[in-house]
Image: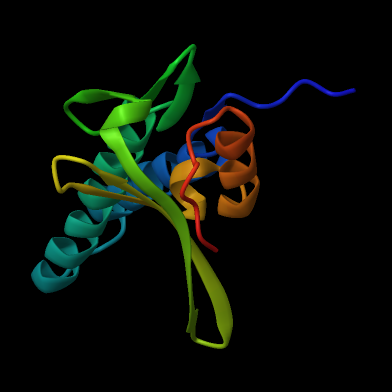
Length: 143
């Protein structure tokens, strides 16, 4: 019997890769690019990638089971959702650029919808839904 995973977040290697590319673009802006529009565009890309990496790292783990509470960590706040605070957890599938994309949606009783992608979870949303169902959170789940 294997232990069930109880926390999910963006992959460390992906965050490190985004930060590394941001740093490389920043170095390129200062040392290689000579035209002003190119510097502006590449500089914006470098700052954007670095900000994305920092925010992704800050929000780890994005979703976690902590006893009888589901913890959702955003960029600036952390929400603790007890079972009565969750009205529905479901998977939404759609096709995008020839691929089937899955999103885990958590609908709360205060009319907020938390949408988590594979990037946010670092795992397949179906596996996360299975873990949440096993923990008793997804009683009204629909796939």
